[in-house]
Structures are given as C-alpha cells and as structure tokens.
Image (tube, rainbow, N blue to C red):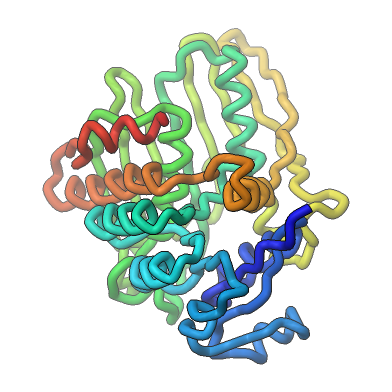
Length: 354
C-alpha cells in the first residue's frame, strides 16, 4: 500500500473546476490537497474543506506535494511547469503543452534532467466517440481509411470577455481545441507528411481565431480536423470513408456535460453514450455499433501508476512536442497558403511511436 500522491491544482477556471478537480478526486491513490486560486470562495463553493492558497510558491515549496497540475491560462503553462519541475515535482500540464516548439523542447529537457514525470492532459483519448472510432478501425470493417474527418463544433456567436477569446499568446480556438484534434489524429495515423491549414476569425467583434480547418496529408489519405464557433447543428463528430465502408459518429462524448451537471466520475451512468456509430456498407445497408463507455478517469489512473513507477506515462512530453509541431505548421500554412512539413528531428519523429 502506498500513501496517496498529494497533488496541487494551479488554476480553478473552466478546466480546473470542470475536469481536473473531479477527476483527480475520483481516483484512489490521488489526493487533491491544495488549489491555487485568487478566488477562494469559488473553490470553497464546490470543495468546502479544500486548502486554497493564492501564491503558487506556497505549493512549490511544500514538500508534501509531489504532483503539480497546471490548469492556468496558456501563456503560464511553460514557466509554471519549469518552476515545478526544478523544485522536484511531477507535473501535469493542461493542453496546450506550451506556446511553441522551443518551449516544449525546453520543458522536456528539464523534466529529463530532473528525473521527474512530465505529462500532458489529453483526456479526450478516453472519450466514447474516439474509443468507438478506434475500435471500428481496428476491426477492419472499414477497410483502409482514406478520408477521416474530426469536428469539434460549437455555437457561440457572441464573443465573450475571457482570456481565450482576447488577443494574447496562446489564445484562440486553434490553441484551445487543436491539441485535442491533433492528438487523436496522430494516435490513429502517426505523423503526417505535410499540413495544409486555413484559420479565420468569423464572428462579429472577434479578435482571435474562431474557425480552423486543417488537412493532414498522408500519401493518398486525407485527415481533416475542424473546429468552429458558428455551428448550430448538422455536423458529425467523426466521418470516416474507407475502401470497404463508411462510418459516422454524430454526437460527441457526454462526459463534459456530465461533469458540468455535477455527475461524479465513476458513478452510475458515467461515460455512457446513447449515440451509436453508424456503418454504411455501400449497398444501402446501415449497421449500428454501440458506443463504448468513455472514462476520462483513465488518464489520472495511468498517471498515478506512472508516478508510482508501475506504469507508463499516459501522454509523454515527446508526444506533446509532435502535437506542438502540427499546431505551428498549421499556423505557418494558414499564413502562407502553402502546405508545410513538420519541423521535427528524426529523433523527435521516432519518439511518437516509442
């Protein structure tokens, strides 16, 4: 038996409140010991007994804290992660991992030098929709997938006053949702040959990217990742076309909605998805496949085991570096109008598959 791994959560905004706090608290062997926030009343409204501090240095200096989870604004991710790593803490960083490849590489080097675990919170690897697509592809029912389309679309026509929608480093929809879309695509297909992208600001009063359409090129295969803030309905979460059949998954995983509704991770109904996957065989026959259970707790379960030395890091810094390379390539492509290759060394390319 091990003593619980005591974790500090930096930031209690949307990500910290909705995802990290409830998921950490649901995993045996992890203890959410402290939250860093300037709004203690907000934290205590949800977690009355939680220790809350306003100064990051208080948890960095606390020897009882072995894991620091960073869910603060994107431009603080790299400096906070470096400070925590240099203090001997294991670190989880919410996406995006960093603001650019140079920061990402620096963090990976610091973690290796310090001998500490550095992981990126890619919780959507454990979404029901993505797990269902993975299973269908692995079964061979689609044949060779030639066209893959992944959408995270929302309908938020009004620009809101929050850092994600204001000009600044790491703001905008591509940095917000792009890491999820890219990570899932790379898990399925590996690294693309080139990236062709179009990023835009479509909403009245918008100041940062709120529409992204990015094509990852793999020989004859095309992988499209798309995000928009002006989709009221009608688009599918996933669309796949293969040499034997097509697949459509209409609706997204429900775990985020469950967390917002106060459903405790792991309770009855957790991760259930009533929306099936539809398989079209080309001869007019449509087969439904039940969506598997989603369970984002699996990220923190795997992370716990990795900290204890009994399992692998669920999302490595090396993988996060490749995601950052695609993020940057897309921005370069959108600016130039040309397809762009990834700025990765051969060692970095191999690391994705390690």
